[in-house]
Amino acid sequence: MNMATQTNDTVCLWDKVKVRMADGSIRELCVVQIDEADLQAGKISSESPVAQAILGAKAGEKKEYQVGDKKMVIEVLEIIKPNATP
Image (cartoon, rainbow, N blue to C red; front, top):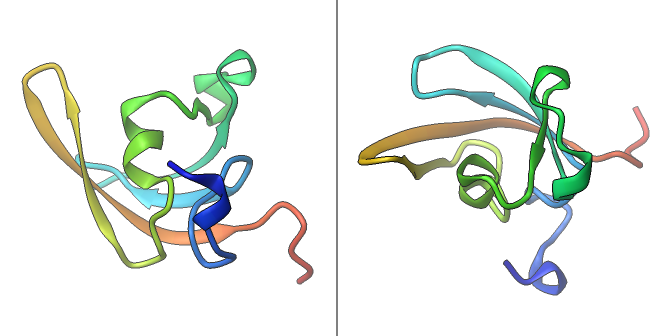
């Protein structure tokens, strides 16, 4: 993913992202660098399959990722920028 081509309406590193997981559950994730990842805190490594699927995505988009031999679909519901003002 080329960080220079990303815009304010796409998922970038350090964004919080509300997603609908493949099982239908809704989670809030934060895409972080690999050494900051903490799955229990909702911080996923930018190198993980889920992060690779959603980086560069816009709200409303569905993206595929693979876990083992299974293809999964994740939907980006909302992107919360770390420096966004309410």
